[in-house]
Image (cartoon, rainbow, N blue to C red):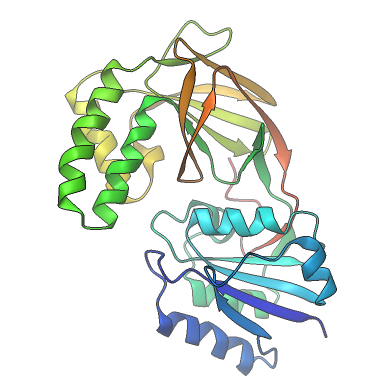
Length: 279
């Protein structure tokens, strides 16, 4: 029997000791006790070679989109199964894999073989791999607002909201190469047939408020936007020399223009609902 590893992010939005214990108990009761459990901050994440050397066939990761993505990227090339459980704020990757199932229900579905194991669509760009999506452009500054709210940091909130508003309306816009329309941000997500791009709309106070509500309610994709189509490759340009990014919810920057391409993940995920979560 192969070994298993359980990694959890204690700082994620909905991860708590009781949930960690309940997941461990579910595996034990199914006759498949977890070999090792550790917080995500307890040393470097294992890579593919280390997982193979230890005989690990299953890695369970409980955390937000950033934690799930970093674990998957560390394990790229490994031939085991990654069981991604939602423990963060937005949990976009876990929702795509498992629908609205909670972490314990997902674990039980895995133990009952109710699902499939599959590589998932991802975005590759330079040294970046994104599993849920990339926001490119000034509107990415709203990620700072969400972080301040999540941390209940009122002082940071008072600073970051005006910064985000200014960036949205005044910083250099972004556009797809070959498309004359420009936007305060473009959101790109991996899809079944390539990369799907959306132009973020923030032309007035009403649309700006709608974006704020979408961020706070858990899915920024619900803000005002328009579809820019689907392609295997995309190039995003701007009058500015650098671009602000949110990659799976994590802040980053890159140089303009920015090239993105469709790919498949280097690790296989358990998906309780198969590929139904990808548009």
